[in-house]
Length: 493
Ligand code: GAP
Image (cartoon, rainbow, N blue to C red):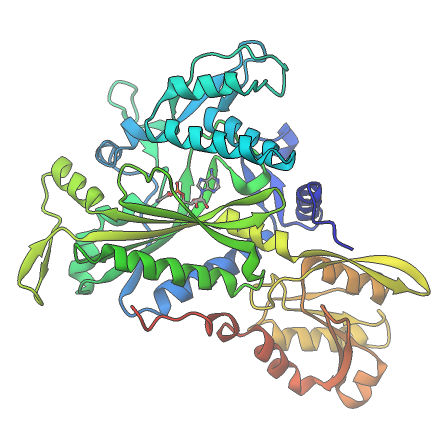
């Protein structure tokens, strides 16, 4: 049974909460808008996704290294990067409900509505007008389009709009003990700037030659006004970013290479080719000469999961100007000194997490004791599954728990495992299906006699009897990193 429709997001959110993947932040105080906490299984899945990225980007590439820079950075960083003056969204307020919206998103939603209603021509025309208005930074035109297309506030139902204004998305705070001496600092809105500021430190200490990359995983903060669709648009989120430094003039070739490498990386997770598409930016950000999104088909439609930008030499040049320090590279191959150009790949970990849940959460109709039943299964790739194996003694008697724990203790050093002895075996299987555990290992009376166990496979529900000694080989075969990483080609770097 497919539940992959508009309500599917609700199913994902409640599944994530029920099984300890994602909780609303500060829930006992009624939550904090667009901030979420990852629970006991969510953190495992998230860590596995980080490891997958880190291995593919850093570990498998001789010329890419990782760093972990601080969230707080010198305030001049954000002046130089353009975020203080230009990191804005065009916002419009409804005067009756006092609610604020992103003007471009109101129009995007209207385009989607036209498409759903079969009004293709209207959708196309509005898309064209919206693209033109955004390209020209024309806030007056954005308001005109909202009025022309009769867009009403979903809360008040009125069309009583303010003008469209720019709204800066950075959070700020004070650093220092006294209010007079305190300095205004920002919570970084992207992790990328920590890489640019460390460009020379890393290049000199690693002795890497261009082309080379610096990667980082870390939190970013944006005061998103429209925060919705679960972990898609959060105020505190995590990014996995690569800045790849290249010789000027070669950046667009690298940009094309990185587009393919990153798409292949996503597709190895198994959601299917048709779930991804490239969407070129109509108006690349101020720092880019080419930009594309990798979009994933979420339950609410195709949306950006990763951005790839050819960032030119904008950032290093700006930081050179603002800091007065030379951020150049001497190329011994060409005997030239230059500011490298940069190709960036930037993926939102939380959006990746949601893409994995969206394709993995499955409702299957099965026969259960002659009756129709629905099995809820999280068909996550075994390599990134939070728990690799559940060890289940058939009963709580006759020494079966001791035997099961003996197996658990053997496996737990190399594999994330779970021990469970409560409830019927059928219910325990179902619970493990729902959290995506690829293998259930049942210990029964025969185990005590011949050291064999039953292995139940999550997706097929097939069971096989094997010896305890061969368990590690089975887990290794199905959950080793090579299974995911064999698809990733790095020889072109
Ligand atoms: N350094 C480039 C940069 O930050 P971006 O397109 O603004 O580019 C990169 O962000 C990725 O970060 C996006 O593709 C998205 O996956 C994720 N992202 C951005 N804003 C987000 C938010 N509010 N909540 C969750 N993820 C977000």
